Length: 201
Image 1 (cartoon, rainbow, N blue to C red):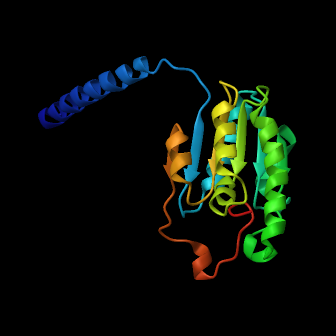
Image 2 (tube, one colour):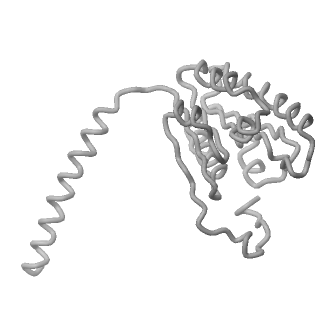
Image 3 (cartoon, rainbow, N blue to C red):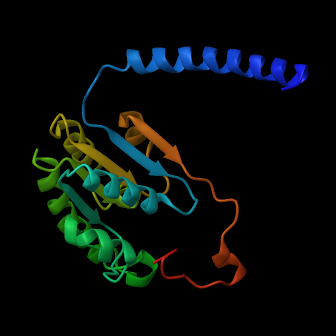
């Protein structure tokens, strides 16, 4: 190793040693163990996909998982085909609101889906609950926000919950432990590419 390379390696090792000390201290300080509320929001693609990645991880740890999909009506998606047999999976929507064009129907459908979600949120046997596209039901006023937020607060202490959807409310974001905002820089659909199995379905 040349002298310059030796010096670079020494500087690198010193920087990484400092970084490791900071990371190790942060890990040591994280002593709480409790259920987390995670919100995945924003206009970009991948919110539900992120949630289903956590479902796969939870199943790998043999956790009991419940999934409620509120807007979607498809039951032929890849995620349900693969993960559904290992979870309690409910597709409760009637499709996008611009398809149904019936607010009263959408409200009734949302409330039926919420009844399933509320049951899961009250049951400590469920260690991970995914509420896919719940944010829309709150922003459209299909569900009472206080009722939903109270159920999230009162859920079992070790239960993790993932909420997905655009435009998460300020109250939901304030309540959450972790919030990820997925941005929309570019999307194949806008270039005329149809939804692709394994990527979009």
